[in-house]
Image 1 (cartoon, rainbow, N blue to C red):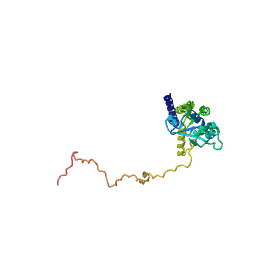
Image 2: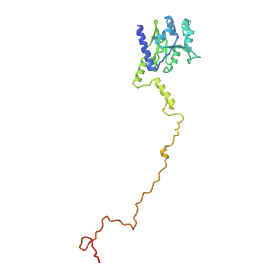
Image 3: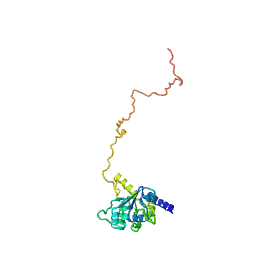
Image 4: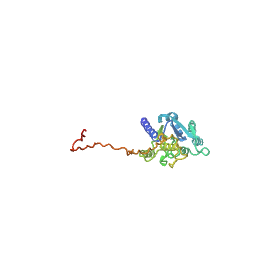
Length: 250
């Protein structure tokens, strides 16, 4: 049974790692109900949680959770356990609220700090009412720590991303950071000053001097004294009609 529970926890952690960018050390928000259950079942939270989650953890709580235990004397032992963890600042420093309400406010809209929540109050953290939240829930059954399966809303969200119908929170953050670097607002328009174009050297071919056009050459006219030589010589006719004439000697 222990091996099966460990495999299921490994599968659930991988789901949150690859789809919602959860990384070690895992930050776990703990309330007094979880500490009281651990005390009752003799569970060492600091020792068993890292083994069960197979990684480093940071155990933390809030001022509201501490104030809630101070008002109940029967939970003094749980208070001593909770005091050993880090105390994260919440929004209710002056006016404390119930621990479950405070932990829920720490998750904000989409759990940007990737918190796990360790509590015995499951009804308040029913994620069916918070479809944008992806929060791993931890609770204690008898003497064992159990990591709850991903909610159906989280599974539907992952399927929508795989089909291209939705963008994850991490992807949206990357898109917004790239837009900020490029100076593009949420509406797609550029913000700020326009980038000046660098002054480049002129094209060397455009700097060449233009060649002057020479007037067309005219044909040379022949003078009147020059005559064309006839290619064929004229033949002199003799008295007999053939050959050249011979003058008799005196």
